Image (cartoon, rainbow, N blue to C red; front, side, top):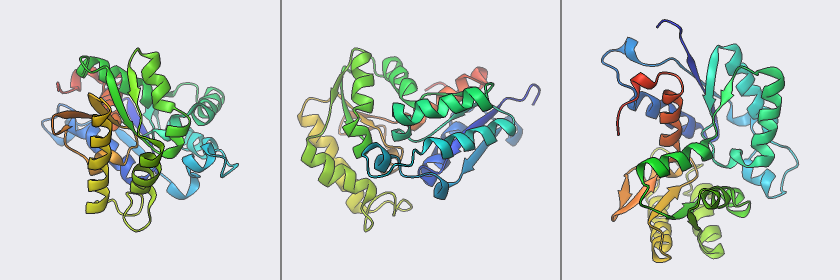
Amino acid sequence: MENEKIIGVVGGMGPYAGLDLVRKIFDHTEAGADADHLPVALLSYPARVPDRTAFLLGRSDENPAEAIAAMAVALDRLGAVVAGMPCNTAHAPRIFDAVLARLREEAPRLRLLNMIDETIRFLREEHGNCTRIGVLATLGAYRTRLHADALEAAGLEAILPDENVQETIVHRTIYDPSYGLKAHMNPVSMIARQSLVSAVEHLREQGAEAVLLACTELPLALPEPELDGTPLIDPTLALARALIRETYPEKLKPL
């Protein structure tokens, strides 16, 4: 491919989320043969990246930004010109801003797209009739109002789960060692899926017109585009399409 523009993926948070982003890049690329697909470099070093929620909640002093930035710099050295990070929680300003600061010094040519910004853009373009948006996310993103503030800044209303639902259903669905998505991703446990279905229903009862699956593991448990008529918004899909748009827009499949 002439003037090759490599797409970088900062993976490992969790590992299946990085894999899912790459798959969605492939799925949304117009290609009739192997050579028509886009050049993608995925780095996945899960053991190197401290837990993002633990840092945001003050349970750890180690900012994951250092390990994340190191992967991004490595992608730059591989030739990546634009990159995405399929972890919603890592876009919290205390982490994301520190990553950007290091990239300005060590990899100024690499553009790291903001997954939250791309999700808001996707919402406006594809679900512009929805103004009350439910949010399912990690406890770290929930407590820091990562998505709620972004939605409200865009003129949308954020519908968050009750604290009890967030802690006992959503958080456990992601982190519980016996059935949670971090521990049991392939296949997803029936308990995890049913827990998320109940969380979507909880948000719908509060008036949510669409639900943002704002942890990158969640779309793997709820892959359908809607649930009982309620659109499910996949930030990984938004990021995949943005990465294609910013490198090879002529190859982006229409939705």
